[in-house]
Image 1 (spheres, helix red, strand yellow):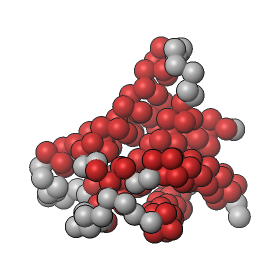
Image 2 (cartoon, rainbow, N blue to C red):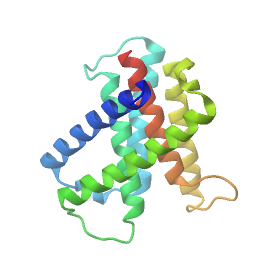
Image 3 (cartoon, rainbow, N blue to C red):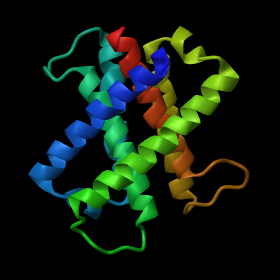
Image 4 (cartoon, rainbow, N blue to C red):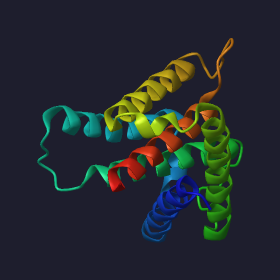
Length: 178
């Protein structure tokens, strides 16, 4: 494995471990959330990161790494919800959720690998604050798509934006840990 693949795997494994532990505590209560609510949860996390970046201080002890992990996990929840939009079950078996998590994490990883091939890992030269801004921009795009009742004329859909946010958050975690 190359450096990026190893770092990516570490970040996604850490995120999934937290996701699974929270699922053991809360079950799949997130099944009640509409896509717009998931988008708002991610927005809250990204906005907190941006405020801390801008102010240079924070009053709540929870670090920004945990917020990026939350962005990853809520983005995967969003993708699971999109996939299961016609499935009315509120309680999902843990093994099914784990497989769905892996499926969407793998889709995001494949996208990252393809983009890294074409862009030459340009994200490594970016500022973490730019990654935060890109996440916020993707959220605004999703909100616009939601306002348009899911319709786009030429643009990617909500799922593509969730995948991008996963990758931007993982890149931020990698950069924070370097």
